[in-house]
Amino acid sequence: MKLEKIIAVRTHKTVYRDGDLAVKVFDEDFSKSDILNEALNQARVEETGLHIPAVIEVGKIDGKWAIVSEYIPGKTLDRLMQENPEKLDEYLELFVDLQMEVHSKRSPLLGKLKDKMNRKISESNIDATTRYELHTRLESMPKHVKVCHGDFNPSNIIITPEGVPYILDWSHATQGNASADVARTYLLFRLAGDVDLAEKYMKLFCQKSDTARQYVDKWLPIVAASQSVKGKPEEREFLLSWVDVVDYE
Image 1 (tube, rainbow, N blue to C red):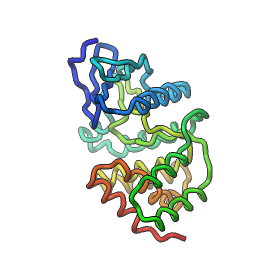
Image 2: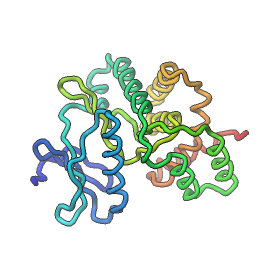
Image 3: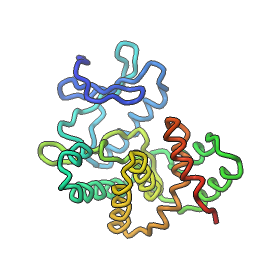
């Protein structure tokens, strides 16, 4: 396998292209169970019929774990948005439609979103009183079993030269409440400093899915708290500010 052409660099991982393959190579100290779980998530979501890269194999390259997938040619939606600002509304519409298509799928063997969030909140360094309020709110939220991406943002969508959208990076996939997934995407836009796009996205999603904005807002402190566990220091500070500003019922 020729690992010569780097196509993406992420924290603790590098993605290479080798012909028709994309090879994601993880750092040596990256958790083996997390890598195998990511490949399993991707394989399970593949079975839903969504357009995603097929897993080809999981193995070791030069002592490092790697996931080998189908290479999808094209440009990310993020790049297209930057290159064609006049088409932003059109791209945002596509983005929301794709996320709603993900939420329309079921994959009964995926991990449960509520379990993951309860665990993350327990691991956070938030004070006990706030943690209790967050756990209580999470338990009160409706239990759904929709496929949730967990990191749905324009840089994880590739548009092929033929115009077919593919969704990448299923390492955070769970089954649960779609509004938690929407809250996560909203916070990702806010983290990137794009307040206008975040608001535009939220308004469009709520309108197209007939979801009350107040309902998604209820998820924001829960999602922010669970995401604060592994974030960079500056991201943690931002996310925890979303936990602090909420009035609990």
